[in-house]
Length: 353
Picture 1: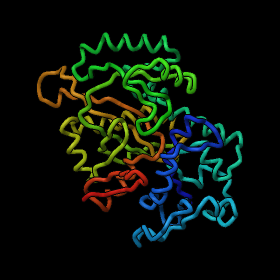
Picture 2: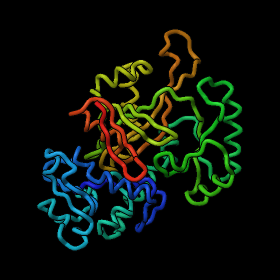
Picture 3: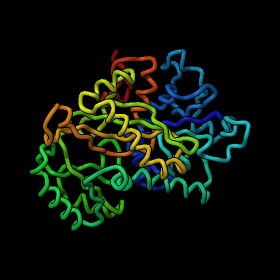
Picture 4: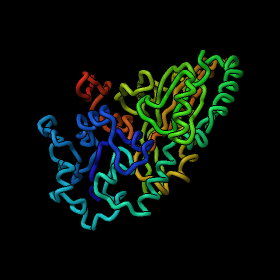
């Protein structure tokens, strides 16, 4: 079945808002407008791609110009119907739309009626996207707190244990709102006012150990037809918690790089264990790509070969398409590094080979 692909990078903020009508911050709107064409890398023949009114097809190489590019104006004015993508009527949002992430705002903007069935499924996806769910199912030594008193208790607990952990940084904890994106909603120093504000708006806050990271990586997955399958390895970089770039390489090469810290056997075990832990909840509700971000830290607690010193810390679950998935698509034809650059006015995707 053909689909309409939508790059909505403001998705995580829309989840926090939990509104049908949502206006993204300026940075989110700019990123969406500048990179609206991004789905050309993973869309299938016959698919359509939602683009901004300012989109110029000539910015794409000829190999990517064969898709049907549509705007919100096309949809609102009846120049394009979602039923055009299939021989069947477009009655299901989840069957005909393939966004960066599923949320109320994207469903509303495309004109879908807020039925109880649609609302219920989107609410389940939002719940699974919360850092609270990840803390309960994939992470260790992480607290979900619903009051400033609980936060202060968690800080004291982590401070008492941090002296025993070589890999943990001087600031013993980091604070994360349940829904946020690209480093937003993350604080490395305690502010009672900020914490209280997050708890008031989102119901709680995550308190977790802060480590001295060696390398970022992610396992990328696809959920479809009631099963979760491994898609590939993502080796990426961040700055201040915000994404900056991905390595473009073969799976063999990326696994070899990671094997400096995590053996091939352990890599296999870890990616399967994640499937085992998330499938029962995610597979029946969510269809599409997602990723689990992790990092390697050196705890320095074991003797023997150097690799024994390294430890995997699960950072978060991204129940949406990720830049890791973009890198997987690009790695079929490019080797090097993929970066998202901002020149003060516009975002661009750059590939250094």
